[in-house]
Length: 147
Image (cartoon, rainbow, N blue to C red; front, side, top):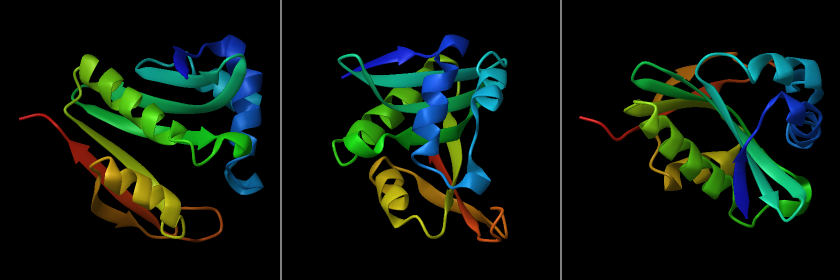
């Protein structure tokens, strides 16, 4: 598997991948993704298995902080360690950009994602009540590597 840095040219591919991982209420379409990609501090890793896009991670780095904006893996490529590798790539990218910690939100109902993040060293730092459109809560997770 290779991870390449995605650009606006990958907007349609990213939208297809995102649609396989999120509900209609949480979906980011091609236009939204193309708007985010060139924003300052945003970097997106696109996992490729040969010529097949398998998943992507989008992070935003500002000063000493990084935030996972989204992480998704195509249904056909799940349970193969792709999300773990994308997350590791994102941490390295954040470190290279001067971040010493990373935050993300994850649904209280997404046990698989919570397990992935725990294995990657993330711990709960808070909770956002009614964070998602369906009214469900999000856990705020953080991983630090600086100091």
